[in-house]
Image (tube, rainbow, N blue to C red):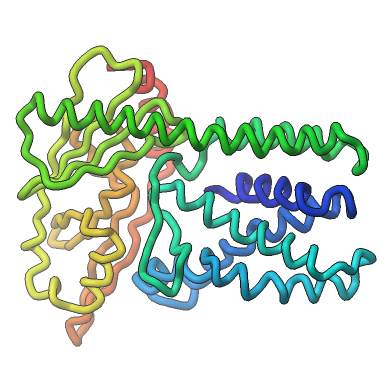
Length: 332
């Protein structure tokens, strides 16, 4: 999830654990702790693209990280804070750390919560930025912050934020189930033979959903809004995996394919080879859009080793997407 959401979650969890004992400091420490797991993005500055992607939401987003580092942070903070109870501080940091990857597991990228085991949890029921999750949560957190630390109102406001935001996540799982059934029904009605389907919400909402569908030679992408009145239309994207040729056997390419969970296409433009990660779709919901959110240029060096370089996203595409989303959410 985005940094603001993780700050709000960390602050609220911190308040629930130690707010009554240390006041607004609990929110401050919680907000800081809630963002620490995302420091793994720094790996992208010192490693190649593939390694950076593998490390993202890896160790720092695991239960093991929370178990190992909660005592360390508790020891450090208890050395200079007036509140000295180390057990409370350990519980504080463990919960503010571990709730971060639990929330991230609801998104498309998911988290390696059980690292070092190669298991990535990705429930795909919320987008990385979801105002309906974050804004009410933030309002209740601010209301709690304005109360004295010992008042019942402070705990009430904070608990309301935690309960409402968590309830929203449960609701999104139900909506995902409804969308899934709608997509599978549409595929059956259109006599489309497929081997796998994944559903996820479109950006910033849980009203418009997207399905990625794998067929023998292509992937299909379709959108469905709960306000739709017409049949779902699917756009086809040829896999073109054969274009990789001998590169498909290179260890780095295999790692990249593993990262994408096999949801990728290959295309050539102006004699340049590109790897498109379909899990995150395109920066447009128009049929047959080609501006993939995560697109990588494949370059080979003199030794034949492939290097994957992420193609920069165009800001105008993001702005245009907002307009398209608003129109599409209202139905087809």
